Amino acid sequence: MRVGMGFDVHRLVAGRELWLCGVKLEHDKGLLGHSDADVAIHALCDALLGAAALGDIGKHFPDNDPQYRGIDSRILLRNVVKLLTIQGYTMVNCDITICAEQPRIGPHVPAMRAELARVIGCSSNNVSVKATTTERLGFTGREEGIAAYAVVLIDNK
Image (cartoon, rainbow, N blue to C red; front, side, top):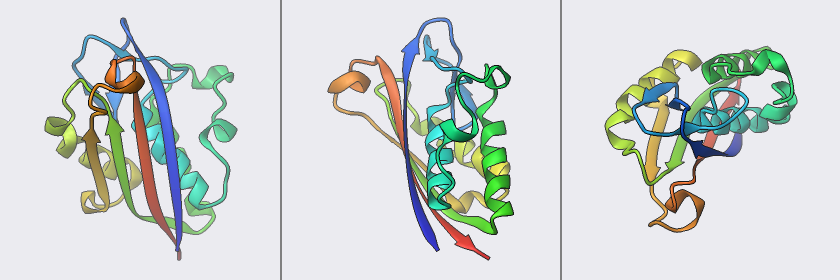
C-alpha cells in the first residue's frame, strides 16, 4: 500500500465556468487554467501519480500542449487511473479538501463524490470531499483563487 498527496491552486476570474470535482457550480467567476482548471481533480491526479511514483500532472499533461487546452479534467483523471491500473495499482480511498470562501461547497458534496467515484470506477464510500474557508486570510480568503488538497491510498494487487 502507498500514500500520495496532491495540491493545486487556480485563480478565480470572470468569464470562466467553475468546475470542482467534475461538477459545474453556479458562480460569478470560474478558475483560470489551460484545461477546465478543476483544482480538486488536479490535486487528486497529483496524489494518485505521486503515490505510484509516476511524477505529476504536468509531466503527463503539460499545460503547453494544445491537445489539453480546455480539456475536461475528468478525462485527465480517467487517464491517470488507467496509468495506475497498468502499474497494477487501484485506489483504496481518497480524501479531498477544497479551500474556498465562495461558493458554498457543502450542498454539492454528494454530487462531487458520486461523480469522482463514477470516473475512478469505485464506490462513493471510497471518496471523501470536504471544504473549508481560510477565515478570509490569504488569496483564498480574498476570493482571488481556490486551492485543493488530496490524499490517497493505493494498493498493488
